[in-house]
Image 1: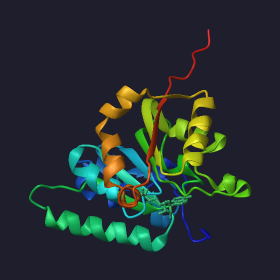
Image 2: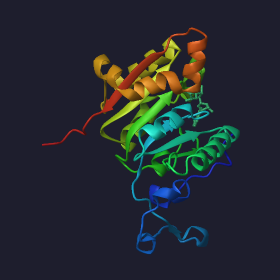
Image 3: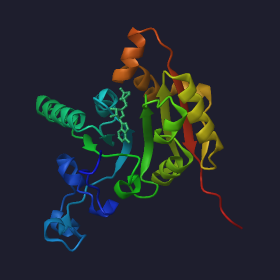
Length: 240
Ligand code: SAM
């Protein structure tokens, strides 16, 4: 159950600064913005840049820890529903930061507990993200459980809202039925087109997703197949 989960009332009231202290905007005083009229959340410190990459259902964070040093100027966030797993990733981020103080690595990565099937637009503004990763989502095999899948027409509209035009949703799974389901739902959605295979295979993020996620490693050990599909966020149509 996620009754204990809290959500920012809006992206502006999300306290990103406590997750990325190295990226807090200078001239802090002038950057303070009033948000909710509650004493405990009177002001939120702003970051010098916005979070751009979200790993939905990040698990133990393999993808995040592999991407963070490769994209040092980009802020990445993992979102995970399990409390203990979220805490594990947060603890590991603290450890990685303190082991890499001189190089300043891993300051650009954070993990927060959230049910991403709810309130995703409370965390991110329209067109904020450039990449969303859906790596080995829970398959929910039974037909009556399909509504629990993190790809659906409704959720794809939320991904489209928070992604900027040209942004990419990356998907990978070892379950062929789920792969087909994800392709079907994204291709049918007016805001997305599938990325061609040649472009997909040139993308370093695709390689990282195959080899660095915990599930990707497990499937490798078991000799399973990994199905990859990426989808580009299209421009919104302009009306004459
Ligand atoms: N992405 C990781 C990987 O590839 O190794 C973990 C994959 S694991 C099979 C699926 C993860 O999604 C689990 O850690 C699960 O707790 C998380 N999850 C499932 N539903 C979620 C939701 N609605 N919001 C956030 N996380 C969710």
